Length: 133
Image 1 (cartoon, one colour):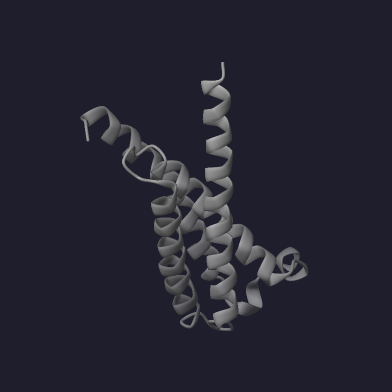
Image 2 (cartoon, helix red, strand yellow; image 1 turned 135 degrees about the horizontal axis):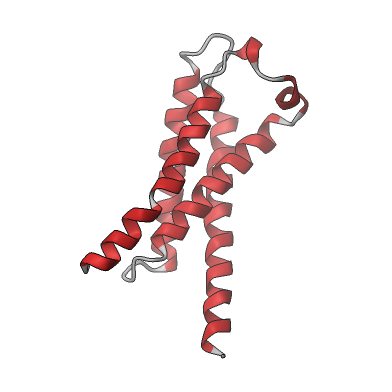
């Protein structure tokens, strides 16, 4: 991997890292202190959206690595979503009023796979349009 490509890839990692930091910050809020607006939103929808966005931007980093296939990107994003969601759900067990839930973990992983899939679909379409010009 040449130096310019490496710099390009590394400069994009901050976005998924920041998103994951925000996810963990949200998991740090004790159960009784969750803002009212989030109590009105279906919990599973929030989980899905968080990990959708995380994996979308993670896949955005990975598509810039030339040797990775679409299948490998999906696998990497799925594994990262699984691991990140496992850490997130386990961390919640340490927070008063919060508890881990395997259904949340499954929704997190589904959101992660969907986010990567949407990015890859969009990226492929964008590449086709650029090639046809």
